[in-house]
Image (cartoon, rainbow, N blue to C red; front, side, top):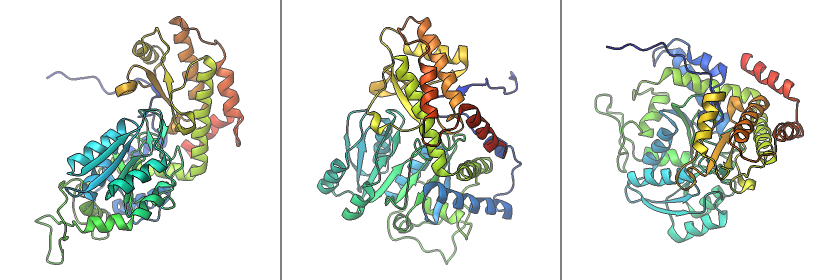
Length: 427
């Protein structure tokens, strides 16, 4: 058979909506040798990872674990474990990933009530409460940050609304976590799922989740233990069995819990990555990480605007870590994206659905939430737009981005910031 060259990926700068370049410490952690899934050192790492993600999610939930799979695996595990056939689930949609929650809930057998607001906006809390009063769902499923539109849905008041009406509250925070504020306990979230490949700064392939006691109680009411490992001491739940074996969170919790009841073989290298992602973000300090994302995102937006480009959507509700840019008329947006990649080794994103071919999405996430990456991307984009004959304000983006980055409340100059980021990686 034909053999291929050794892996040697090009040195891309990933400035799209995710994935992004992983922190070097995360890549180093993943290179460690594998150990057995029930080795005491491995179970210690699992316990440490649980504790670290309680800090990331800002929660005291005991049920804070990893689902082995991409962020979508976390979403599906939560929804299939909470939803029984016929349950009413309310899904407000403000971008592509609201549609994803809707589809997964439908596949789990839910009676889904969905409504959509224009892309580039978010859903008013009053609208959510009105829909809850009208439909009285069991569960509200709501994306926090939707990279398809770059919008950040406010969650702080939604949990209290859900609590008042006896509704479980779930949010997918994959795109927003640690780049934007999230307070799971304070905001009354019952279930939260995430992924590593955006602001957390790791690879796709592990989905941290956290569940309130209320959510765990519901899942335990559907408890099932597989034949072959079940003993007389195991008692099945009184409600319907969770339809998925792999995504049965009850069995996953038994695997991560003190019983260590076998379910799957933990993906060791991904656990190493997830552990390191959490540890380095907590070492930097969540408030400082969020501030860094805010500074880098604001600098990118300032540079794009100064260049003469139009930003997409309601900027008062934009995520810190990704911005939508309206593609100037008269140019092939995809051709320019390809030129960014082939000439500068920089990847930026297109978008989906009604926004496909209309906006670029440019991210400043995780390891790439730095001044140097912002400036490099802006300079490359300006050069290609100028070459394409687009009238831009040449030379304006660089100083505008630099000024915006430097005028933040705790600003440091670009040289110091870059050196601090490097020190964080090496420390």
